[in-house]
Image: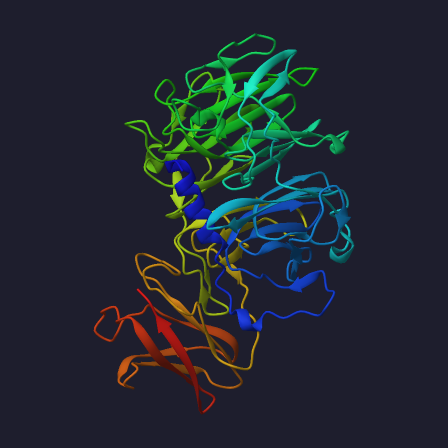
Length: 527
């Protein structure tokens, strides 16, 4: 398995590990909807219609339609390709595509024998219906038969390596155009589905080889092969991670740069291939694309990560002349990005160091992690995986962000001192509980180098809540007083003792004192 697969699989498998107290997740038999988020990991956000917001989480597809209530669609492995139903394929949501008020395409990912694999896709034509009335059309994760060693493309037959398994064949991005649904399936390459006849299934779309600057329709290529294996046998440019389309144009990001395609009347695509070091993009691993339309100009933004070439860097690259020339943003050089979003004059860059924003395309300001001052809560995670600036009248200009510690919404998106509301998968309970449990201070809820565990409580009258951490020998390790209002809330602990040292591995007894009573939780710490 090559370096790209290793990194992609490690990252996405980590995201699928939702930090939720499992024992509290219950539902009624036969329900197709679950209340709230079922995972705190939010990797995709898409807006649709007048008020709908879709969330791709580490445990399924969630939706908000009224600014307050969140539901998650039930999922299952028991779906049949070509059939319809009200649940979605099981797994974490790896990509969401929307079109108009009613069309929604969702992809999931799961783990098979320790490897990340495509979980399948679900397509709805009535996404604006009430949640329990949304109907899904199912597709297995696209694979090839062992004999699918050629494809017909622009009246020319091209050689192709069949991708026959779902492992490492994950849909990481979706785009919906006038004629086709497009999916970026990493080892499965670029594929598309004809909107007028979905029964014919997903078709492979060839891209230039690593050493090609273009691939034109109807030009015979005797030595060409569509092959996502590592060079010299295959091509990094056939490992597809992102896709975007508008009009007759489709843009594709791969492990070897960016491809711009023009679709002709027959559906064939003429490709131009841009890659480092021939072009001035920061790196060849392209994980997100966005088209900004502003002041009679279109700017294409790309999250470009370092791949295998010497001199590559993580960062944000862009072109304002349809790919003729490329530039990077100096302040974002070496920033590990996940997603780019643009609306009007604004561009948002979601990264491992948080969220960045520009109003002029050059000067980027950095947001601090979201703090919900009304509820004495905060996002304990430097990573921001995705963001959307929502200018629909229903929400009156808000910013949505997805993190590994929940979703946050700001009513003042232009300010670093934003007023945030944080939404999580906390499950209401009369009992105190800790999550994640076991807890690793070097892995979980990392913020500025420290990891945190949360303690959920529900106070009736106390303003002061005391957290005391004791070792297995019942020796006091740490005592922290929190000023909290009555009602539900959470406390956090960074895994350190009163001297600031990380505690040793082992079992700890945690006392949360409020309303005149002690509430005990057993916590396992594993560094």
